[in-house]
Image (cartoon, rainbow, N blue to C red; front, side):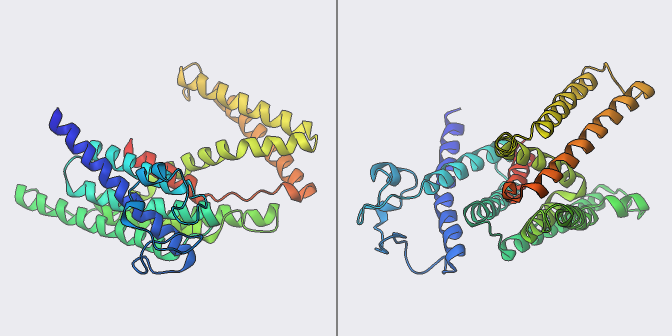
Length: 331
């Protein structure tokens, strides 16, 4: 037990140190500087930092969140990214243990954090970061396929090519994941032209979805995108409701509330098997009512956006997808 605790502490500290480096990658990607040179400096006064100013989390606490030289406030981003990376590394280690797979998911999660960091800070997603995700996903698929074929060879299992194997091997799954991510995000993004005359999502989100598809495959990607939408809705909901109240759009607000309550109720009825697909008529009526409420809500929301363009709040979808991907990795 003591050995496990010691290892977990080392893993957490490693995550803190990597998180410190990821802060550099995020900020210097945005400033278009090298991540190697020059040495760390205060972004305000440009004074080079001493080594003890760069101790993850602790330096922020000891310096009371201020630069040691110019006394300007240091962004809370630094300790938050460091702590988050440490926690994620520890959780992934607990799931995958001492293995090559752990190193792989650590690298992937680091790229996730960088992508979310630039997107949250400046609503920017860099192609190179998403290309790395796609490359890692394809590489993992190739390695997984080679390992599977090798194991079949050594166990004497005959390798028979069939339609099932062709469609379900890791490489095909990864490629289909890329295609699925691009198609779904582009359809959703271009649907924004019908509502607000602009894309609903940036092109960077499409690249993120392609990277997630390459890593997780198309089946898991669909779940990740659905979960990402849920996370996005939860984040956006207070802003959305505030806009409806501000414009006194009680009809849309009432319809939306009814839709949410009915959707939750319909889910609970299915969860407790009160309404099931085998009760065809009852299930069909319930699903039809849910669909109609959803359509009416969407129509009223879109109408409101046209009448009140000032309420069109752009929130990057990338961080929500990354959050959903973290859940898929850890759970």
